[in-house]
Amino acid sequence: MNLSHLVSVLLALGGGMTSVAHAAPPDERPVATFVRAPEHGQLDLEAVLSRNEYRTVERTEQYTENVPYEIQVPYSHAVTETLPEYQCRPGPNGQNQCETIWVTRTRNETRYRTETRYRPETRTRTVLARVFERQWGTPVRVVFPAESILLDGERERVSLQLTGSAADPRAEVRVESEIFSYAVTSQSRQAGEWRIELRSAPRWSSEELGAKSISVQGIVTLPSGARALRLDDRGMLGRLITDRQITLIDAATGAELQRTRQSPADRNPRIDLLLNPSVPTDRDVIVRIDTSRTGTSVQNGSISFTTQTRLYAQLDASPFNDPKAVLVMAIQGVGTDARLVLRDDSPALPEVKTTYLV
Image (cartoon, rainbow, N blue to C red; front, side, top):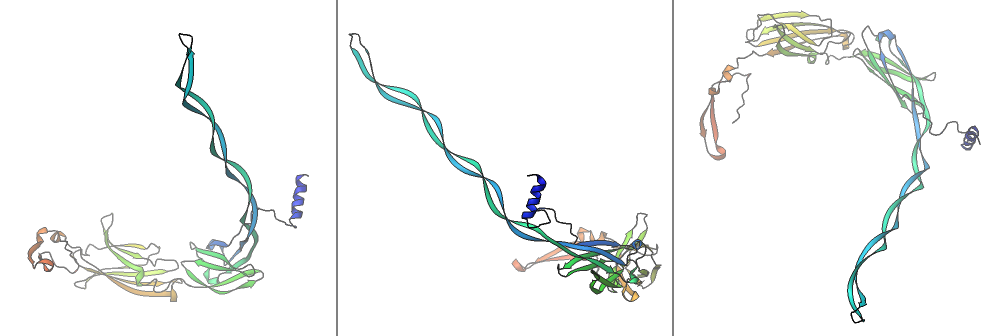
């Protein structure tokens, strides 16, 4: 019987099976990811999602197992014995002289020891096998609204995931964007594909882009030696125009020390505002930031807010480093009621917290 005839017989015995056992299942694609960009011109995204299904079957298989068994193996063992032996020898008067003497002799005897050996045996067992059953899925189309066309440099990440069942395949969509927030307006099966239509909304809320988005880090010295007020603005996002006015005020007198207006074009969240030499370091300064943001990515199209931060004066630390400033005056009471009385002659300032470790 040649090979082609053997294959024909096996297929006939298999009841008309059209797939060969143990063949690799087809590739599946339950998830699809796209990067949406203006150069792609994509208001519609299409993908074919699929998932493989498997069933568990029992099958018998033969395997070889080394089975132990015991045998008796002969070996030679030397035995030394001392036994009495009666011996005679001719005497001087022609008569034999006989006596019993002890003689030591060695002899070999056969003994047996038990050894465990192994022999291969073919056995049969039942195992569970994962067998490819079928593949199901659906074409998917995601329709974006016309107003969601992206501009140069903007990107959105779109993920599709197959859901539902073989009888009713569906898909879910998730969009990661810094510009728009999307919601599903309708989804249904049309012309053999699962169609998802989206509507867009501004991505950021007034709370997210409000006062909490700006933080004053303090006054820093730049590598050039100049002093700068450092800010972090997490609202420097796409489709958003930010205008801010930064005013520095003397906390003691209320006098305006510096006023700067900014309309940054880049999205760098780190801002270093150069300070005028007249801004003191030995007095508290109030930093007031009046901010307005406008653009399609913020709810209601615009937001305005004001933040104020107090920067404390850079104190001279030398009065606080004097070990003679803290004196032990007395110990009052005894036992658990005893108290240590100290006198601290260092300056008492509300912004300085002192901790004593005794």
